[in-house]
Length: 242
Image (tube, rainbow, N blue to C red):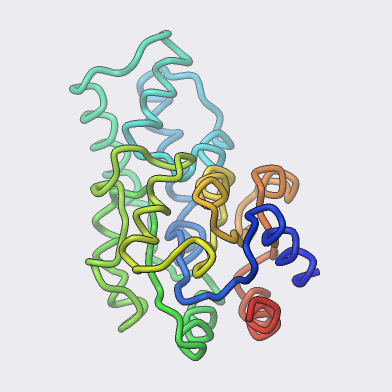
């Protein structure tokens, strides 16, 4: 299965080899078990402001910047973009609720994946649509020595959020590698779309409530049910990529 996925990628991208030197990790739902708190905080904020939404929307919107998510809700409800004042008010409210609910728990298996990546000599970078300082600042405490701020891409660094390829293209630039010298680990359809659009081999881990089909339809090259399964299969992935 892995070899077939690698062969499909190489054929599609007209490449002769995959030579991984870096792994670009999404944060929420990959490194932290935090998406349920994001979804709850977004949904409650939307309800407080009479915006049309269901909680599942926020798993689909994951990867967008906060501004993009708020504009999407305003277009849906009022057929217009939110004003700067509305965007600031809503994001501040959502961030306050998220910080209230979030327990900061690391995603089970993520530490094992990072150890595997480092054992194989790969750079590890974060590429997230998040602007939550509470999690971004906690990465070093949760995963010591794995990430540095100069090699992170966050909502503060990009003009366009996922599903636009810009965040992952910026990640490649920060890693100093080409698209066929990296791979992406994502849990969200928009994140998968962004990785694929950037030309990078993209592995999806379905740590949320969405059907597998949503991630596969977004273009994921490989799909795992959780980070533990990915860690266990890492040696096989590296053999097929090498």
